[in-house]
Image (cartoon, rainbow, N blue to C red):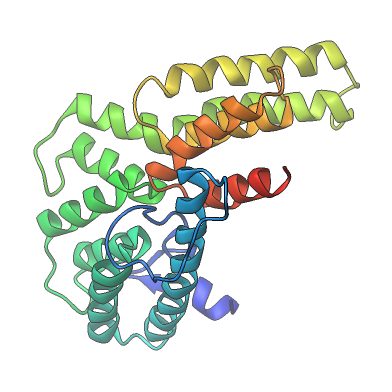
Amino acid sequence: MSGRVRSWAMGGVLVVAMLTPATVLAAGPGRPGGVRAPVGESACALEARRFLAREALAQAAQQRILQQLAVKDYPQAARAMRSAVARYQSPWAAYALAQLYSAGLGVPQDPQRAVRWYRWAAERGNMHAARKLANAYLHGTGTRRSASRAAYWFRVGVAPKQLAGSAAALASKYGAGTFMPRNPAMARYYQEQSVRILRQLVRQPNAPAEFALGSAYADGRGVARSKARALAHLCRALSLGYEAAAVRITEIEEAR
């Protein structure tokens, strides 16, 4: 993607995050047909294959939208975003549409409608939308203030990377001796700490935490390697709309 597209600004605010593919809903209408399950393939693996087949169409639509944004054709981009939501159930498109309503580009400025689109995208796994929704509840922008709802969406949109992810990063640095002396014991401690945080986070629906925990079981990081547990968490992440889970599930299933 060109740097010009990535640096497209909305109302003077850089929206690089909006132009970065995040997650797309795994379930819903509009799937392309013709995907059949091999003998013995699980329902989850079949869903992953269906998702990947539909994702190619969603990505093509996204590229067209990015081209429209690059030339500031916001009305046409808004129409294309609505189409991508209707046809492919694309949380990215819903998030992008929320950004347009928030800034009043190509559509009337409408904070309440922006929040509705942020919520739709966040409920289907878009982490950027979850952060925006958390801030909306925190400051009462387009919705009533709610500390509890803000805390929930910060937990879903921020905690998996900033808490569990930070612990995993420390484990990696201690394990490799990067920026600090190599220390296998500390690496193991932070791997286990990351897993403890993830287990707390998945007590409520949390797609990125489910994906990270499933990946930990798949790789044996901080826990004993377990294909069954890895797939259980990855399948839950996929059901919540986490894009990367489809790829990982397919890799695990094909490695049989």
